[in-house]
Length: 172
Image 1 (cartoon, rainbow, N blue to C red):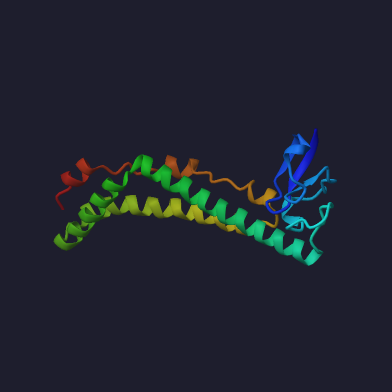
Image 2: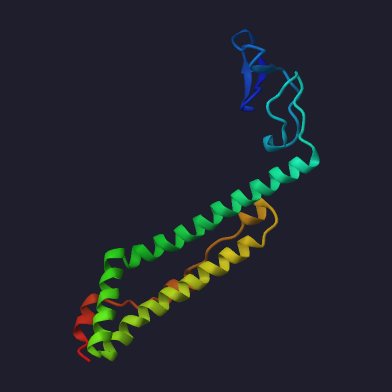
């Protein structure tokens, strides 16, 4: 059994039966570098896996880090959105938006103020999200990026619990 590495994709297979793998497509029993694959030269042209020049490794690392940040940015945003949706589904948010517009048009200031407690609360949650995203953007490694979490505990405890029934009951 041998280790083989695909020359184009850099896929590594351990315990491969070498007769099943063409040396034109696979490198047979190479020394595997102690470096991430993004640092490997591709395609592999000889029987040795070479590392990219340092400038190309730096570029690959920067691209990798940006990808990790983009993923984490989206992950944090999705966590906030999912949490908000679990309490105030989109259909209810739309209803509150329409009710706020109607209350403003009709001069129902108490009703509007009550609905606006929800939007103030949503904005404070967004501020927590933005702070976590900003913290994450300042990180210099994928490991640091992945330590950033979204702590919504305090925000959730301050939910004004605005309800459609209560909105309808406020007549001024």
